[in-house]
Length: 574
Image (cartoon, rainbow, N blue to C red):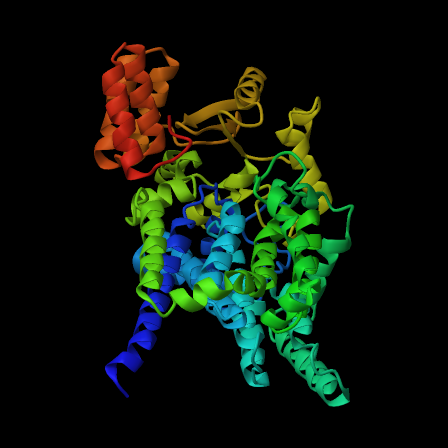
């Protein structure tokens, strides 16, 4: 074969690699969603609990409302991976886990879309669309495994036939990683259905394969009960847990916002172009799998915003063949010429440009991606230093963090495990306290806690603090920059409390106290001490910036803002 004959193939391989590298960097750049990842903490703690107890059948040891009850932990394998990763590399390195899963998920999707569309450019663009739609929901949680496994399922079945043992292995792993396996089984039915060769034999193979995968999914600690949990959650409209912000419909106020969804929800209408015979011929027929998967996931997403990432992936499957047709001659020409290389380099440049402002260093990325600055770190340092134990009525989002830091020494009223453990009455009672209902204090005290741990700025925190301390039944124990801790007045506490460990978090507590007292210079100085150790710390940055501005030193304030944004370009830091 001559050099002239091999050159187009070499160019095509180069373009393919350029688009894959561009895709990896682009998908990584969408892995920087800032979110208070409260569930992450109890997942890591659960992994530790699994190692400590040596059993997969878990019983609650972290709360005083469900103590001793069986806990349906259907994500135990994800928890072990979390804890193992954190033990080997440190808790902050969980951002690397997140990025690895995201990049793997959308690279698999890109390869699949390129195969079914006949265009690597179409695969790249549609996978990019999918990650853009999903971006607000890409937090450090096991649900990322469902996105990855969905992409893997598409990779195995679209345009090819996978063996039963491979699919069965996928579902055995998936069912123990995340409850999204149930959606996986629904998607499997659509992907296995013989749309283009419907006869008794092909239908029999599809049914046998689907039932086989469902049977293998029963291989989990809870057996068939794991199937009932997502069904119960989906059809029990009376469940108060469905009012959690992350599970509300996308049109409802509050919770995670996904503004782009309201534009992309109309994108499936582009499938009407498949009605044109010329389009069908060029696309290789109607992509029935994409049509059904998009319809299913759109209905799910309109019901609950947490399903929007699944819709994004499904929509990409629907539109990729169509985009391949529309690119048509352009791609067939570009992929074999230097113009295709230029196009690939351009896409790579866009990906690099988007990723450039973000850090690859774990510590600052972790701090912002899980909103570490919102957690009572110094408070828990103080609690551990003084070996405080008992029952604590804590802010819901902090329950998992309390578990991670105290390993059950402080038992919470409720936490993010929601209806896998707690009943509706327990949750409704908490919500009444959170919303500061007229009887909030009676409800809180009726739970008979030893301590109350609450944020300064959430759920009327300052009013709660004043009301409880003025009642004489509660006394202040400690306050840090995020929270206050009260104890029952008759509870025995250390006569001489031990200070929390010397850390930037303690410096922030001192800065917060100085700011409350109107001492702006000490506030800024203590915040600067915190920044010497953690120059990216959002709260420390804000205290220093605020202090300089109050002193009229706007140029210094602007310089600090630039330095802090250089560590992480957070939209919340001003």
